[in-house]
Length: 317
Image 1 (cartoon, helix red, strand yellow):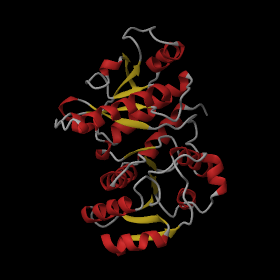
Image 2 (image 1 turned 90 degrees about the vertical axis):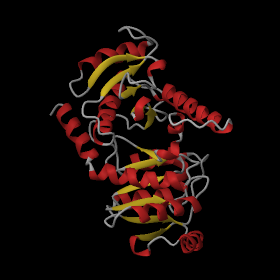
Image 3 (image 1 turned 45 degrees about the horizontal axis):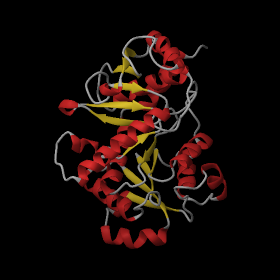
């Protein structure tokens, strides 16, 4: 198994990315190797200082970086030597088994769609976020930002993708799916929610349990909650702000500590043909390590194969 890592993406790259690599290689048994995509001149002194096992990684040179605020499509075309562009080339050529970046999210989405494409039958790939719940449990919320406007059918597909993720990665045997809405009763909500509800209810590939309100996000109401990306991103940023307030007030609480994104690292771009993990722009070493571990788990559990099987069965021949 060979995991590709964008060493130049993120506010604290490449130093924190290299530290994350060292921590991962110290704890992960042999069998996983890494391809570090980045500027060799910048990487060399940091690799020498951190001293990760040289037998378990190789450097794939890149000469450019796509900034966080650059236009994704234009930047990918203008910077073919960027770490993101080269990482996707390696993934497309099967030289790596997964690609990870904490860089420009839009460029990661565009790069994935242009090189490895969506799994047949999936209309729109999606990204999710982990939701801490009581008693050490976790749920999933999706979409959280790349699909601001959706059709009802998109939410059904998000539910299927989230179900597979919860089953394979979170180890929930029968994930409960809910629709984020402004009331519990069927028929509540805007036109999108009203149209999506009966489609979710009739979908045989998920265990749909009805609507979930905002107050249900952090309790045990459901394991997978679906919404369009506008609402999901607002919820995600609100949760991040709660954790920032907790840190500033120096509050120590086992539950609130679970809002620290470093524990999860990143999220898969669900619905594309190869494992792609997108991290937070402010990722540090612990987050990079977690992203690499998540990539290996996606591969080991054959998550993408499970998704393909569902959509082959779902789509008419």
